[in-house]
Amino acid sequence: MIDFEEELKKFQPSLEVEEAEEAIYSHNLTDMTDILQEMIKEARRNR
Image 1: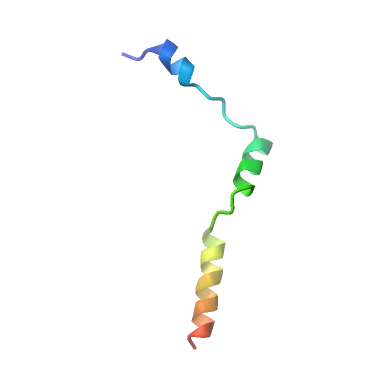
Image 2: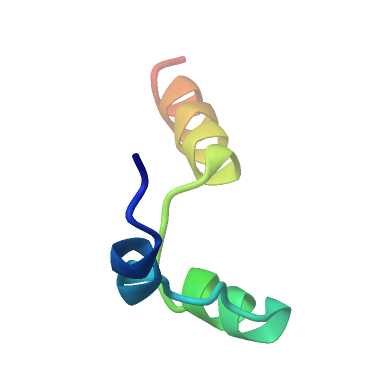
């Protein structure tokens, strides 16, 4: 069975949109665009 009291102790509220954006943008993460740009650069160098 689920121990609701224990689960409530572990609960962390979700970030608001602005906070989430800040958390996401503050990390320098590689996204699909970065990967594609690197692939294009590599392909141009190997011509």
